[in-house]
Image 1 (cartoon, rainbow, N blue to C red):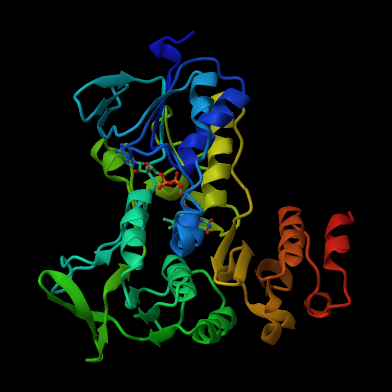
Image 2 (cartoon, rainbow, N blue to C red):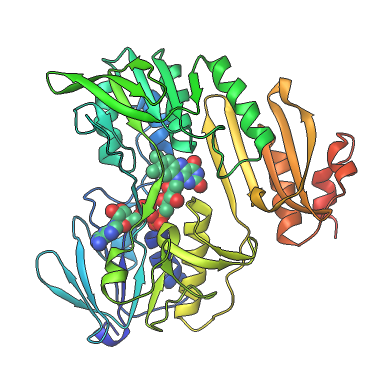
Length: 411
Ligand code: FAD
């Protein structure tokens, strides 16, 4: 059965690529599967890298996505440390960096995203890091024991998770954010405001509205960060967390459409019927956003992989999974169900002073998204409601006596 004619080749062995190969076997694909990844580690989960791993990397090792034996037991040809350099869509082959060509019947691009770089004077000094891979995390973790002051650039999820972890280790942390609120792309303004206070309580110095002018160093190593306001912050280590760009170069070079990611249709297929794209690298028509979007989350990678596997074995349909997300920042578990940007009204459930509350957001009176801090029950209930297209009223959501969990389970 393992002829090239039925071989499915996956570029990228991260969250999406590994779920895809698993789902292909679960869906009954008996033909060959090759998964090619340019990292050398056994595929692993990224989320712990900015959280537990930074607090105590030796105790909380990065978790593998699957046990090593998974690949042999499922007859999956997994190649590590292998970079795909070209796609020939006419010949249906990919070229890897040692020059070999791998033929495919179906190709799945699960290439993820790469950290956005910062190019200001001094940005190539030692001690300035990005955090995307286990290798990045290992390098940062190895330095953290020796640093007194850290500057984080960007108050997005990864920057703030890392800031909270560094504070747990007793390190001085300053976060510089160009925008006027943290996590502004994903959170409601009210929740951003809450997190400003929460990080201040953790001892983080959070400076909003400050961009980066330059880095200063000594003996080739960073010693301070100068912001656009003229302020200077001492830094033994700098983490740059200013977002990512989708890894779409391979697709673009092969003539596939790329616009903020690889353009796919509602079945996650590109304009070439033999090529799919999933996860952080894919720009898809979102049922929930009502527009094209590209998401960066474990849920998105996993659900898109499951969907693409079904489509490949002939069970197609429109991808319409509910987006959800989590982040852990010190003692605060943030969970988001739905897309907050689509809402017009926000209702508070619970008391932020207790660090346990949710914000229910509505669009035209209908539930659109729920952000929860340390209220996992609200999050799960919200996911059930949103998945079923149901709503609670704003009055019900605000009333702690209203049992949203039972309501979400009743049909
Ligand atoms: P990736 O996991 O990035 O995998 C893509 C892989 O493809 C990479 O290994 C890449 O090296 C490889 N690749 C790319 N191009 C090639 C090529 N040409 N040849 C061979 N291999 C190639 N999400 C959450 O929902 N919650 C969280 O708490 C959370 N925390 C995070 C913390 C960190 C530090 C990071 C970095 C991300 C976090 N995320 C979180 C996001 C989540 O991990 C990503 O959305 C998810 O990993 C995306 O999966 P993916 O398979 O699309 O991409």
